[in-house]
Image 1 (tube, rainbow, N blue to C red):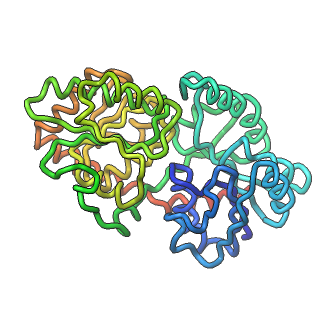
Image 2: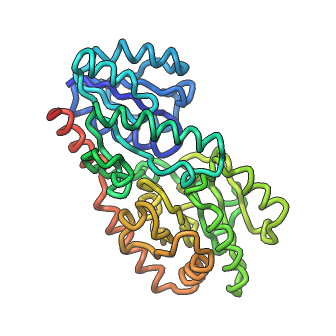
Image 3: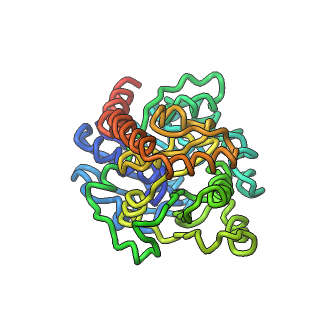
Length: 368
């Protein structure tokens, strides 16, 4: 099979999905050509995650929006099947389906209403355009796969999507070694709460921050919060302003914007608690990363978190800062609970595999 795969090569959930899935799809296909989206890094092959790729995987040059849409519209015709990951970049797949009857698979990574996803007017508009115009077009012409049952429920009612789970980030721990804690301003004898991910509204960094502040008032020992947020997020500006001007615990909050796999590995392993109360997460690769590291999880009852984490974490009501604080204190103060959730996390993590995901996608490629 000759597969065309349009996606983003960059840090983030879709970037991790792309690189990990391709490594497993390579041995199943005769040839794969990757078409980087305009939001990929400038040189995708130099990205940290673009390593150990099978030799039959080629990558096209990264181009701007209009040149990439033109290029993809012509080049997609060279393949047996196309796989796209964004509805808004999917017009070349639609063109080739209608003009040449070349089938395509669309993985639905994100859903939700504009208000739910961000407080930014600009990004609300982008979500509105994606959901109301591009999503219906790709859903009516392609084969749809969702990354969770929850996310499938956010698709139009006429869509009968397959659900294929991600496989985690095992390479994060297999191919890296922890770095010196002093270099990131932490010590192994501190009580550390970790939040990883961009500060988008739906990921709800606010509840983690407010819960952390309340937990500090409830607990006799000092607690530190590490916000590993990378390049920021839609709500980063307002959160940064709050931390700089209003929070009385700003000296106990470590904000890390420069993140690589070594830093992530270190943070997961040193953290006592992983607090990620996102209320609209489509899947949550970070949950699998925390399980892999043996870091107990606090998650909300919203989004795909209950589906992915199952009984391997503490579930709180979405946006409930008091419940978040109580869960933080429980996990720091109760070693028996801490160890039990670690054990459940290791067991739950075994149910997710990129090899399993690749085999399911390959079966779909052959049947459409």
